[in-house]
Amino acid sequence: MRVISGQAKGRRLFSVPGEGTRPITDRVKEALFNILGAEIEGASFLDLFAGTGGVGIEALSRGAARVVFVERGHKALEVIRRNLEITGLKANAQVVRGDAFHYLRHAAPEEAFDYIYIAPPQYHELWAEALLALDERPYLLTAGGWAIVQIHPKEYRPLPLQNLALVRERSYGSTVLLFYALGREAPAEEEA
Image (cartoon, rainbow, N blue to C red; front, side, top):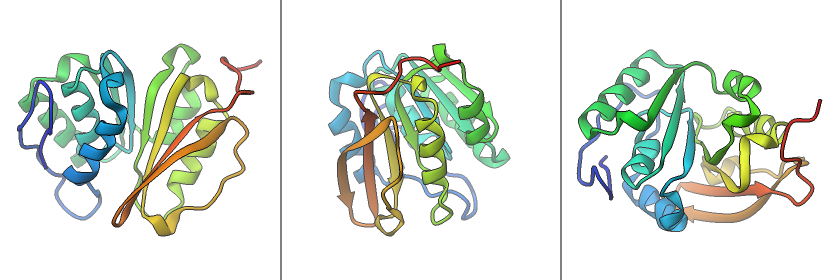
């Protein structure tokens, strides 16, 4: 696993020991950032269930202004910090130790992100739970922003979303990336 492009191009990233995380493959990561293109420059990025931090680090390397990594696993947090150190990208990173759902429930409206990446452990319906939580707080996604879900194709099911709509889907073998955007009716801020 490595940084594919940008300031830290070619740097090898450490993996989390054990079987608890499933890092994105370089092929899928490259495809993801080809889709995002130059829009990543200056963007704010939330990496939920961050694991090794590989996706958020790629965003920083390609010019994202700010990345928040949310992870609750102790070993994974150590790896994220180590990877930020070896890539020299920690200045614009915030590492949050905690539960992704707690973070989504308590993030303030001014914390809006251009991209929210959701890649939880497989086969536990966590992706759906996270997306539904985000759907209840659409103000966390900027207008024109995307929530991007990484799952196994067998995990996908339509969700009863009120504010988010599936706008793009890309499959790469045993990985599918789902891109959600705010619908026209989504409020810009949380309503009291």
